[in-house]
Image (cartoon, rainbow, N blue to C red; front, side):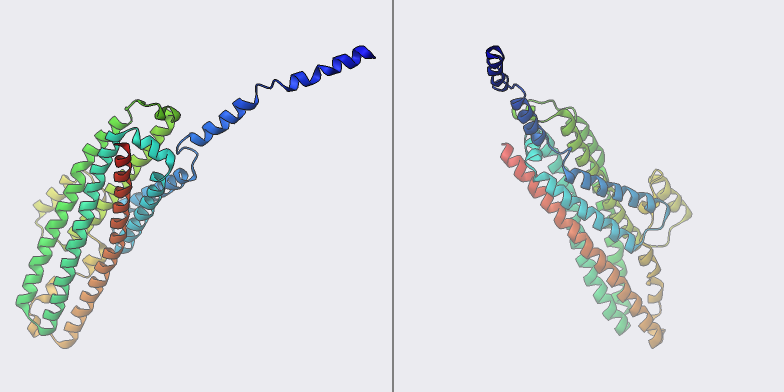
Length: 322
């Protein structure tokens, strides 16, 4: 009985030496330190990007409308707001601070978007002023003032085409930057906490956000440009226009359907000879056009603010990295 009792004394010695406690805690800490892969915001923004991709697919086979382009802009605004939340994650901040050149390239892309939407807001304000003057001219049956309105519309269309070019010209540079960004190796002790897969996933999300921003922006600017462009194209000009797009989707080669249906240029001819009922009809179509333009201005301004906020967060990240 004494021998059995002595063997029982050795049992606590096994419990005093447990090597499994610290590794379990260490593994738990590492799972927290991983950046974006398991974070719900990544899943959310991927769903939003998929929504924009579905919107793009629908736009390929259907005429672009005011309702459709407004929906695309709203989806883009929501995506950038989620993007901002991802930027504010400590894991994302740490990852971006380890790649300052990456952040600088993103800043260049964001500046291009902000400048384009800022210019668009200015152009829309000018168009609204010209449009209000045109309505006064219709009431007074002043055809000379309407001629000035037609010239302003043509100028507005050309300025919108410049915005399309400014967005498209940076696309190849952006893609080259992102290709290099994925090849940047880990160079700091802090980055050792971040897995290559997680950093690549973050880069993939950023790349997708930039891509859909380009697409929706081109759809908006080109749709507006085509809507206000002169309608009298020769057959040669139409063929050249279709070939220059290199099989671009319909959303990029057609104007907004509502703006086309509200076209009133032909109604301006011989305005003094028109009856009161005809003039009232023209004014109604002009008010409908103004309402459509104001709606686009409102939703695009929200995208503009979201782009500015994203850029501010990127600037803060770059400042902290220096």
